[in-house]
Image 1 (cartoon, rainbow, N blue to C red):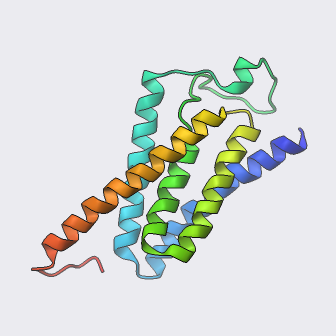
Image 2 (cartoon, one colour):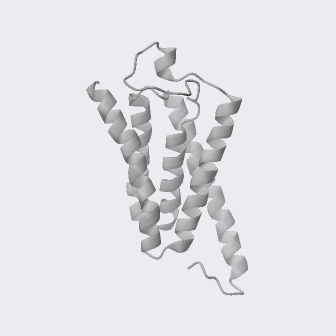
Length: 161
């Protein structure tokens, strides 16, 4: 196993794990609305990327380049778009919209996740760019939905402070 594989693994999966840990930490910080919004955004990004993968099956770079990798994949044609990157940017953008300083850290980690996916040869750069864009756009759109819902609840009790 090469250095680039190890770096890719740490950046890619380790970075996504760190971003996923933001969710329970936000809950513990009594940021219930942000926590719920982030979970909804995360699942929406996952569903959208999985749907696109079914419509546009693209071989992963290591298959396309005929490179042997030190791990096995069941789905060899799931390259486009990057689900890991979409979920990472969905979480990061959701956090950034509510907490800018923490969000900048989260966006940096999301960028590292995308770079890791390319280093691992499981995604082409365009897969990562599109995946990251999907995650960010979903977070932005759903943020507006949550704002509209919050405005409607202002007349009554809002239990998700």
